[in-house]
Amino acid sequence: MSDDANLIERFLEMLVAETGASQHTLSAYRTDLEQASAITGRKLSVADRKIIKDLSSHWRNLQNSTVARKSSSLRRFFGFLVEEGFRENDPSDALPRPGQVRSLPKTLSHVEVAKLFQLIAEELDCDPIKPAVVRLSAIMELLYGSGFRASELVTLQRSSISGDKPYLIIKGKGERERLVPISQQARDAVHRWADFVDPKEKWLFPSRKGHISRIRLYQIIKDHAARAGINPANISPHVLRHAFATHLLEGGADLRALQAMLGHSDISTTQIYTHIDSARLVELVNNRHPLAERNLVR
Image (cartoon, rainbow, N blue to C red):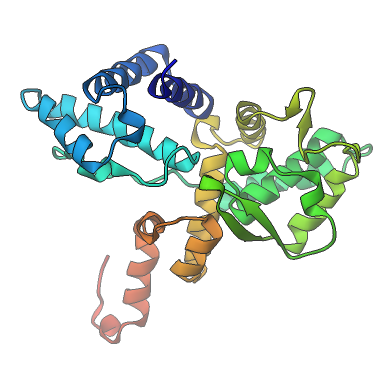
């Protein structure tokens, strides 16, 4: 199987796990990606901006809606490749945007996050405490409290949480190391879970075949969301990571600091969160700007 074919299969697998995509949707993505792969000589996954720009010339006679769909398929595919460390950069800015607006990543409100953690707190108060709840507590604290990627979390080694350091040094995309701050609450949750893990285990979140899979992680998060009264379609490990970034920015975090914590190699990737936070910026201008007394409106 070629690299393109293998990565397309991985992408579709993740699409099912993250969004519960229908067979019709998967078929559309597969068709768009396989056609693009064929045009680029089975080198879509490593294509640079020039190749991508040349690719769009093959869509010249297609309707805008079709071009928009194909561009969207490729953007999502390249986003997946970058997110999972299969390539360093995203060339999709060379794709045409026929009347389309860049979509913003999903996130959660403070109220929704509170519901997720409130349910965990209630279940931790039960006697006896279920190990699955202790594990869930550690997972949620790391995803929302520190912005872990799904792949980073499932491959976290048990030895990495020894001691009481307020941070972890992990390897993210492209084998790049980054420092991830860990709150006291997160450290407590992780140490509580580590007591349930055999000291001989290599992974912090083990399974019978090694560590838990990313698909299993998605299932755990979605099941918890459903029990907390939140639509499972609106949540995933990536959504919790986006919520971590958005809520930090709302709290006044510096964009460069946020870039370092998220492990983005390019600041432009982090800047997407400034768009999500536009409502807060409008409120800031209305309340703090010298012209605020002249009744600026949103």
